[in-house]
Length: 189
Image 1: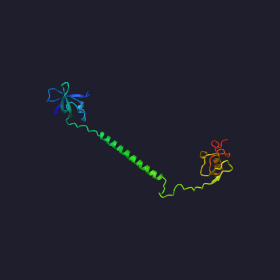
Image 2 (image 1 turned 180 degrees about the horizontal axis):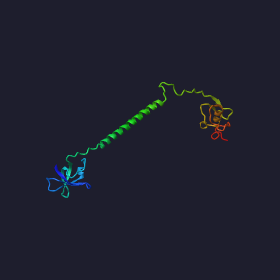
Image 3 (image 1 turned 90 degrees about the vertical axis):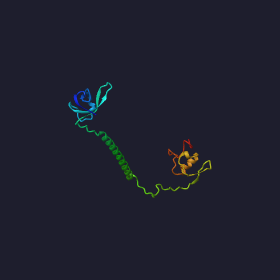
Image 4 (image 1 turned 45 degrees about the vertical axis):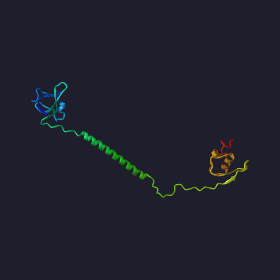
């Protein structure tokens, strides 16, 4: 590393020249070579530097520092950002975990409590024995019984539909209540 004195400095353009007894001519210095210093250079500063030869053959000062001037304190923003992003992720995870826990507690409170050995929800309905009737005066001697049929689609004839309508409870075959069942399918006009 070389040492020299800053002989000239153009603050508006950010460059100057260093005189060093090690070289025959002044060495060019650009402000970018001093970007890590805490202040700009002033004429008369002692500069420590390395030399780099440019493509045009001229020498340029690089890796410079001003004697007696501290380096800029390095900013810790990058590490701060990493900490803040880590902390924000940690906060999000904690909030999600808290939300899941609260939801589970809510469902425990609002869910109906039924003991394991509780009585059945549906009680068995006693089944009535089927009754067998002979249809009244009819042309056929068919026997019909009340075995749970309720709709016209379950009947095979007009006689069976009439038997169910007259003798069995809960039938749904006489929409207009005129006593004639299944007019469209079996007992039409």
